[in-house]
Image 1: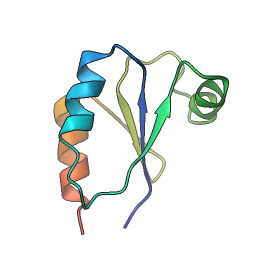
Image 2 (image 1 turned 45 degrees about the vertical axis):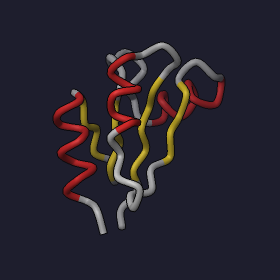
Image 3 (image 1 turned 180 degrees about the vertical axis):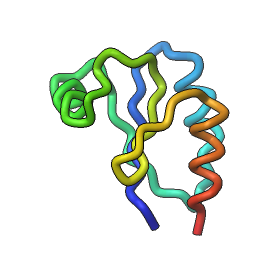
Image 4 (image 1 turned 30 degrees about the vertical axis):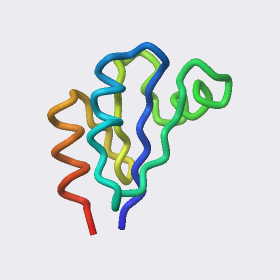
Length: 77
């Protein structure tokens, strides 16, 4: 299984949409971009200026709800 990191923020409808559709058997680390740690991690992946939600899958940046869900579903066990 690959490492999946989902960058989100509170009150983000698209973020909530994706989080509700993550299959139970998929392990994803969810990062809140409104925290200092979240901003630091976003800076590491060079995604500070991008619109949320963003998925990082093994160093690949995936944007857009449909693309994110497709990527998540393709990596299920």
